[in-house]
Image (cartoon, rainbow, N blue to C red; front, side, top):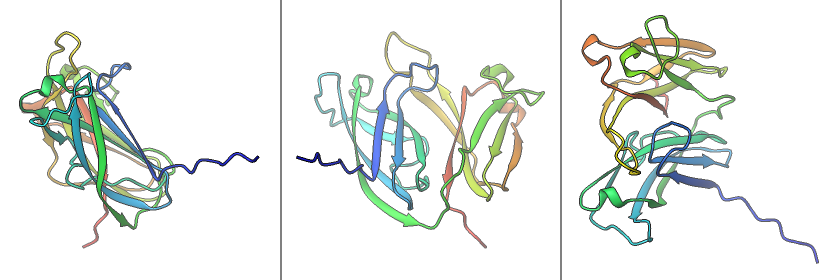
Length: 208
């Protein structure tokens, strides 16, 4: 008897409460296995380590995937960071994620990932907040893209709890990156040293 091949789901979702690679905690990753770019809107149910629901916890996302803002390209990946508030927020270890809505849009599939990194005064990558003077952006694709940039501040590590985002500064305007281009954004002096990470998400390109 021939074995049936399993059909891959259109989207796969993974949540990691504590990073093992030195990156941010509470990271949500969505992979798009279709040939259509979308704007997904996510809904969340939080649970503790025993699987018990935490109904009084409010879940938000750094990039706004709970509101349908970030773009998930065809065949690509969307990465967001969750924030929890309310009674029981410290106890969250499992998050059930559902797609509340999926809007199809016109956007080409990425040939390579967009990169955003913290850079120092010499435009070299750094992971030290004290040396974080600017943001380096790279678009290796043969077409232009629009990205929204956020700076993240994390709380101090406490025991084995996930390290949560305590402050987010998001640029008010999208950054338009030309095809096959590099771009640098220098930080205002009054915010240097405050943030620990730079993150970005794709946006739908608008024409005026």
